[in-house]
Length: 96
Image (cartoon, rainbow, N blue to C red; front, side):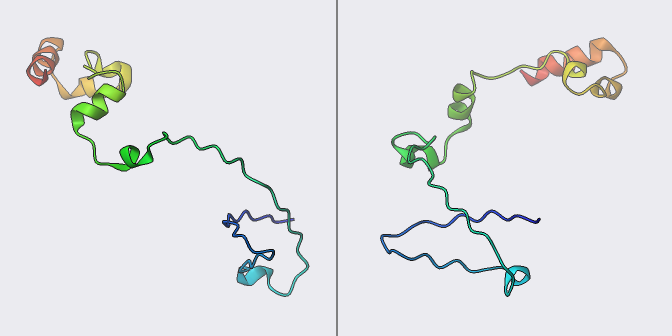
């Protein structure tokens, strides 16, 4: 049995109109209604959540700037870009 999930906001009306996809029209269907909890994972003041943030604000939210000192630890193949460890270290130092 194929199942679909649709999310519709409920109004104060006693009926709910659900537009059906073409493949469901004319067939028997079973409708299950679930009440979603009202709590939200967004902060209380969600205006602040959606505003554009500076790079410094984003870095502060994520625990400060991260400095990659071992690219192989994260990517495995980046060390192939430099001929030696010294070249890689020099590049990383210039990036700070």
